[in-house]
Image (cartoon, rainbow, N blue to C red; front, side):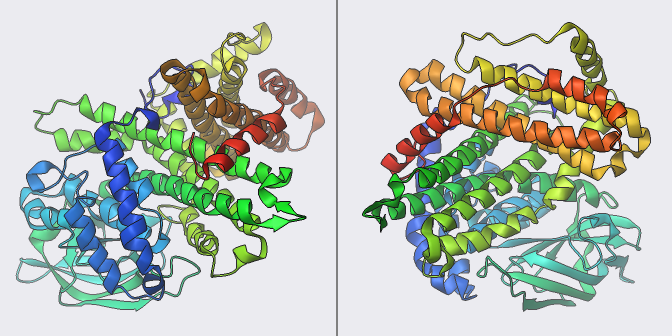
Length: 588
């Protein structure tokens, strides 16, 4: 499938992987990661949160021994050579201690991937083999004081030394995760102040100074430092990739980081549910457990639905990457480049996973604190830490605002290049506004929800089309409209993933297995449709500049496109909550 093509393709065009299809190997990896995180990492939480990096480094060595750091590393460099789906099972289960989880995701994602994907054979032999075992810990160094979201505005400069054997790098990097104990930094600088390039910089490099730890709102135990470079002497053979092509590394690596962050957010959602349900079952008020109260069950259902959609999306995306990568010619001389192009192709889905899952986790964490009441505001209860820790996720790996713009602008750019037939789809939708839209089969399971998702796809295309027609080349500056379109596109991907998963569960495992997830789909599609249509209506009013006569045509089109569901979400929400409360975990 084309990256972003799900907006145009009918639901069910492509098969999706669902977690329930996990192989024995994948289940074992998930269990291994979960046991390591809960039994090995969590007991050191107090020391980690106090800023003691010694247990973190020791736990990296242990994770390396268990094989948890080497899942994606090719076997010829000491790794397991596994794909994105098995790695997702690891990523979502190493989530009991937020600070360690951040360090782990950084090392296995944005710190290891640059060497793995862009390194020379010599660089891989020297560094990748050690990153795979935890002998070396990696970090990623891109952000500068004046270059955050605009990464290419960085001023760190590299010049060739007189000896011709080294580059001398000068500048400053900030917010370097793992920087306090990392052995290897993937660091970006401009050669001669012009050519944006990646370098592999070792910790003991002359001229490199590691600054103090930042005092942060959350993830207190993760290392976040500043790097100062004053004629830092880096061997020429440590240039990573092509000179002047550092942006390819920076942005491709961030795509992987965004997927991993989505996977970790899914795991954190599950951890919060596991901590909250036992508490509300034993906490008594008005002579009965607060879990018996309807509004408390409503919160449980909210957490479960958010987790379900996030999980469905992340595993679908991981499988897509694996399937497309597996179809490549393994004997091709440019195989490494082709793999990089796969990551680039699915930049839209990577951004969606990052934004949707991080915001789902924020909601789940907020509801968890509320379920604990006053105790949720106290450090003695872990939900307080989760609440603080998860706030960074909407900033990490490109802010959610930047990622929303990436989603829509990438689709529009691909449309203009003829890579996505969005304009053809728009013309088809404009014609159907007059003739009527085809409806999904009403008799089949979730037929109404399938129809609603298709309508939301049309809404995304229509909104984008109206914007392009009104603003043309200035569309990229209409950020509030772009954000609204992005929200529809993200929910389309999430809801479609959830619905397809539910249909596959029914097909493979029968009605009983599908009952709760179908309830989740009904709730999610009904409630999110209302929210999206309301936002779209206001966006179209804004496009019309508040002029009733101009908005009238938009309003009529919106009325015809909008989903037509009438769903009793109360009944479904109570059924969902009953299941989760019974299992005391996110168990479907």
